[in-house]
Image (tube, rainbow, N blue to C red; front, top):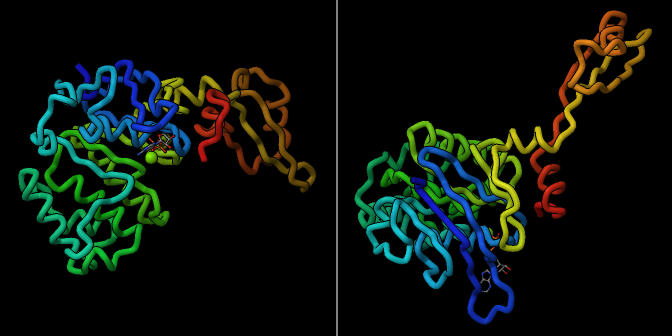
Length: 286
Ligand code: ADP
Ligand code: MG
C-alpha cells in the first residue's frame, strides 16, 4: 500500500474556467523521494495543497497514510511535515519562537532545531525576528519547521526556491538524509537539478496532467541517444570525435583513435532530464 495514493484526481478553483488538475494518477511508496516536475502553472502546488488537506473540494481519490485526505482531521499534521511554496511564518516572532510554536502544535520537537538550522546556514539568525529575514532565509526556516517534529512523510513545495546555490545544496543534502532515515518525501519543483539529483521517481506534469512517471535514469536512457565524446591531440592540435556507446568494443574508428592519439578527455553525453521533459511534453520547464 502506497503512503500516498492518488486516482483520477481533479480540481477546479472556484471562478476558474479551466481545471487546474484534469485526472491525475500516481502512488508514492514508503521511503522514496517522489518528485513532481513541471513548469509554472502546471498544478504542482494545487496537488500538494490537496494532499495536505487544504483543498477538500477535489474530485477523485487521494489517500495519505491510508486514509482519504477529506477524512483526516488535524491529527494528520502530527504525522506529516509541510513546507509550502510561500512560507506562512509569524514575522513578529523570532525563528526560534516560530519553531517552538509549531513544534508544540504538532507533537513536540523531536529533532534538534538548532542543528537543523545550522545545517542550512541560518542558526545565527535564530533569535532574530522573521520579519528581518531575507526570502531565502524564510524558505530555509520553513523547511526546518517541516522537519522538527520528525514526521514520517514530508511535503516540500519548491524547497530550494529563492535559496542561493550553496545553501540550496545543503537543503538537498538534508532531504537525501530523510530518505536514508526511511522517511517518504513528496517534492514539487520546476528545477531539473533538484528532480534529477534527489528523486527516486519523477512525474512530469503539464496543464494538470501527468505524462510519465519513472526514475530519472530510465527516462534519460529511454530518450537520450548515448554517446561518448573524445577529445584528443592530433599532431599537437586539439580535436574531438563522437561515438555511439552501443558498439564501442568493436568500433574500429574508436579503437584506432585511442591507439594513435593522446586522449585528453572522454565523456559520455546523455540527455539531461530537461531534454527528456521537452521531448516528452513539448514544453520547457520555465
Ligand atoms: P504550479 O505549482 O505547478 O506552478 P499551481 O498548482 O499553483 O501550479 O497552479 C495550477 C493552475 O491553477 C494555474 O493555472 C494557476 O493559475 C491556477 N491557480 C492556482 N491557484 C489558484 C487560485 N487560488 N485561484 C484560481 N486559480 C488558481
Ligand atoms: Mg507551485
